[in-house]
Image 1 (cartoon, rainbow, N blue to C red):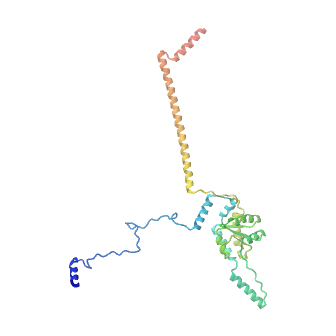
Image 2 (image 1 turned 30 degrees about the vertical axis):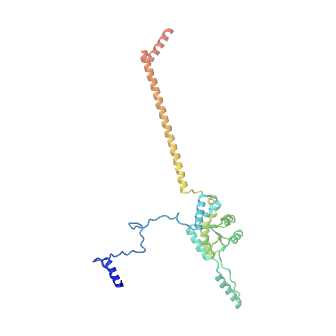
Length: 315
């Protein structure tokens, strides 16, 4: 068989196309947006869920949160608890604006200053360059200044870790009569000194133009920290969780309920006793009446007769 005859047969066997169903008759497919998110039949947005417990937090965040919870739950001694008492926001802002004026030189600034001094010496001018008034930092340097009574104000960070580095410093300041204050953020103190963090800073002196602002800060710090006995004796922590508090409240409620029930039971018993006694008295009175009815005379008449008989015998 030739190839032409084969092709003719295949065409015959093929089903005939229905009229009216060509390209125009085809149904158009709906365009689907690839980024459209369908959450349900009504195409509503997904409900907002709390993913706090579901999310896998980094280890350092977990440790931070656990430490914070522990500090709330455990009883914190006054020496450590005093670091929760920090300067107010407005006074802290005033203090840091003052400290920013006395931030130490950077390496570039120091280099340029020393170069100018060297150039003046070459020329022949004996110009002495004084060190600028700056904030002192470093825990050993600050302690030595406090011991020598050269520091006029000591600023301590509240979140030093380990806390043992700074625990003794407020007591030393009080002993030497040097005003001190506790401020939020070791990183904030570090920024003043061009470092990552700083445990404590000290101001030895202030320029004439800043003396009024400095005196105001000292007037706030002295009563709040140096002369405040409450912070030195107050224990911290001991705050129970909401779960524990609810359990205690539940126990209290149950104990109060049990007390109420006991009181009600006692009242019922007393009422029952009174009723029983009343019934007994009524029964006794009824018995007496029955006996009197049997004898014919009441007992009161009998007693009168006896008395009369006794009188007659005496006569």
